[in-house]
Amino acid sequence: MSENELPLPPSKVLVVDDNLQNLELLEAYLEEVDGVTTISATDGQGCLQKVASEKPDLILLDIMMPRMSGYEVCQKLKSDPETKDIPIIMVTALFEEGDVERGTEVGANDFVSKPVNRVDLLTRVKTFLRVRHAQAD
Image (cartoon, rainbow, N blue to C red; front, top):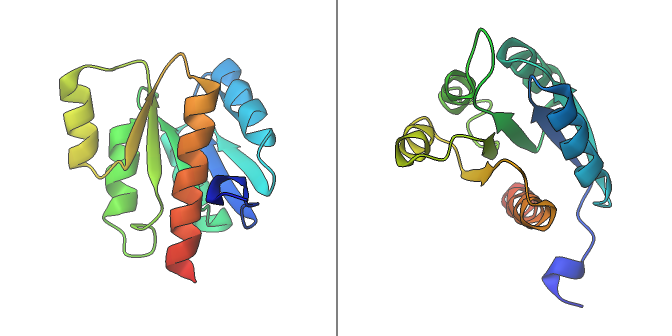
């Protein structure tokens, strides 16, 4: 059995998107992964509250959101010792070089472009969760 076939340890993934269709789609994709529980937020403030209360293992974060962008959320989380190690995958329709550069500057671990490719997303999610749990062991 290869490492990719091994079941994941129980994991929480926080999905953050102000578009409910996007949120539901990402949650539906993640339901396919054994051991993964999804939680969601529809804006940056909600994301920060869920991170504090739920302690997710991974965050899928939209960039373009009202009131607080994904960049701002990412920067806050990465600058806090309590949350800096949570991997953040930015999910974005913005795929200009400057957007990736800015995301990298605020600490994003990876990027997935919209429309999301299900296989690509799930591969990245599983990889980050395996690394996260390996570091915790």
